[in-house]
Amino acid sequence: MTNIFFDTEFTGLHQNTTLVSIGIVTDDKRTFYAEFTDYDKNQVDDWLETNVITNLTLKEQKSGFTDTKTKNWKIKGDKSLIIKYLTLWLAQFDQIEVWSDCLSYDWVLFNELFGHAFNLPKNIFYIPFDICTLFKIKGIDPDISREEFAFEYNNVKFDKKHNSLWDAQVIKYCYVKLMLM
Image 1 (cartoon, helix red, strand yellow):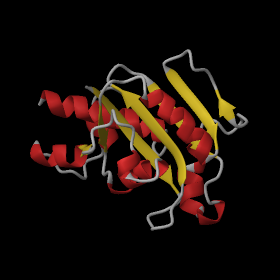
Image 2 (tube, one colour):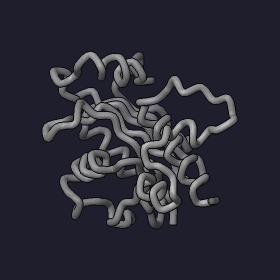
Image 3 (cartoon, one colour):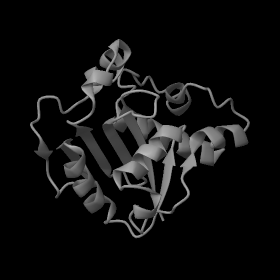
């Protein structure tokens, strides 16, 4: 079973939100990062512009894919292009267990990429898991700073928060630390 840790950035906490980016990291450090070119720019407010849009890393890249020969895939494009490459990337794993932070929106948006939950690739376990619940089970306040918990005493800068790939990596580090407790 391969664990994938994922995060999304989107245009707001409302029903008609649109994806801005998705970041995924695996147990063995493979990554998938995509930035959507067709998100609803009319939904971007000042907070999103300052905290999410400025943290996109493929701004200078034109639409397209970087390189399928590496373990780290980066795509910029519309939803259909990203779904194509995400499906290919996910196909390299026999079985996948999905982990996120507070996955209420992330999981719904992930499912929406494939149309709905019944269209998820067959190798994805249909029940997602979240580190919020894991924090609670371990007796830790689920509202704890993820970065401070994950990187305690490591002098790591937190300037990438709200970049979906960075946040996925933080989720992974929290998971690993929590499982060792």
